[in-house]
Image 1: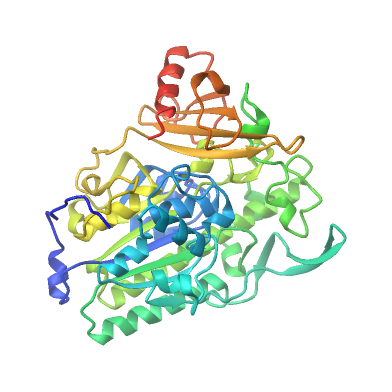
Image 2: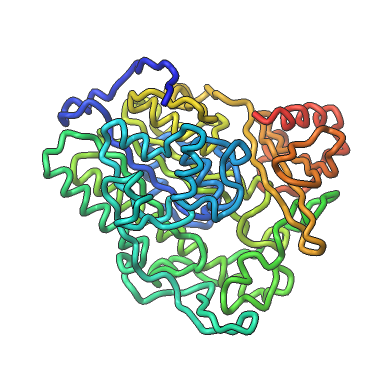
Length: 490
């Protein structure tokens, strides 16, 4: 593998106190977590652990997924390559074995495999790719020295008939009577805590790189009842936001039955016909699951502190993409809109303690995590990747390596199975732009091929992640400028 020349300017002083020359890393990724949390301002969702952590980290306000779906987003993150630059563009291609095989074609290692090759003890568990880490699997061994299991409870199931066949499908929500460490995410976190304690007591001089993938708040919205009890059903607010004007709905919006069709008690509905009471129940379940995931993150951070590892560990917390809770009569993800692409993102780098508690508006992508962690750990930044290190931003919140970053999305129209694709960029000027063309994602268009435009003011005059008014007709000069950037494919 070729590497860009890099001379680390700073290593952690605390590393030497622990008998190792490089810091540890704890990377936490949760599934389907929207950015609208307490750390970003007023939110009904209670996340006390993340709120506490934000005072000891830097909070990124403008962090983005490169694809608004689990598998491709995670593949892009793990390889630091854009989905349309040799990455995955559908969920199956986001499974670990396929991501590793695809990365090898481009001379790239996955992020944990790279750290493993650099002498780190790599520990992984949960949903890191579009599949859970499985001990004793060949693809797991490529990435991890130690694999943690997550074979716990995750929802109540019912037998239903689908296309003439009987299937077991989960209910979309469940207030479980099981304990927090009996659910699959809780079981995973317990194992991670046990490993930290064992490692701290072993006298092992090697640093560790731990990746923990929490499934919640991904559906089914199943978690212990105590987290449901934090909220009151009558206080759930159901969105009345309708679709923006002047859009090509079959491209711009996700399917009305997305999410609903895979659960036994919602499969007969779509986003329009779904009963109001069921919407309240789902929002309640989602919020409970976020609070559960927050609790588990707190347990991981507490374990670092109890084992005297915290001061020597870089911690990254994020999600694989954003999420909708009924906006536009749609649920879940899978659009290029801001709410589906913007993610919560917190980074604690002990060598930048002076910036703890600060927020930054620097534009970053999930593909930037890989090179950033390499630089922060004093490792060469791999060649042949698309990501840019945001390490400098951690010492200067006003610094941004990017002016904008893009996301892509292929589409298939249900009616005639015709294919289309879109690219979107979010710019530091506060506007989000997307355009659509007919054909394959790989057939990147010329301006004359574009069949639809969208332009939204999210952070210029407004301060919202909701796309409400398509203003592309009102700002022709800005539209042209943004289009030229989107056509550059960088």
